[in-house]
Image (cartoon, rainbow, N blue to C red; front, side, top):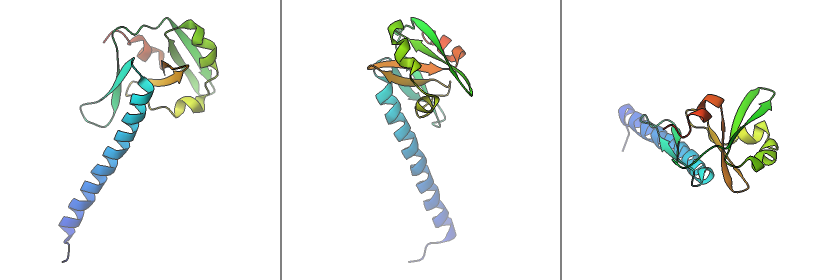
Length: 128
């Protein structure tokens, strides 16, 4: 049985959609494991990205500036004593973490979920 060009294109479209869903699924799985109990990753309406939705009781005790060659990021520390451990994170370590639409990544430091991202994005945490 021969497959026509239209059918082949339909099959190709289905395979591409499955591949995209697989990538999003893997990213969401990693985001869920890192976010712990402070945040939940939620897909955006277009289904092409996600945002971290933080628990209402999550508070940032201190915002710590991380300086890298390519710029600055900020870490929202729930406990100031985590500062020294956050200082050890490299730009490469942070780049490996899944980022939401607002540029927030979540690092696991001593089993504490630490949001890292642009200052204006961290300022919005707790205001949603």
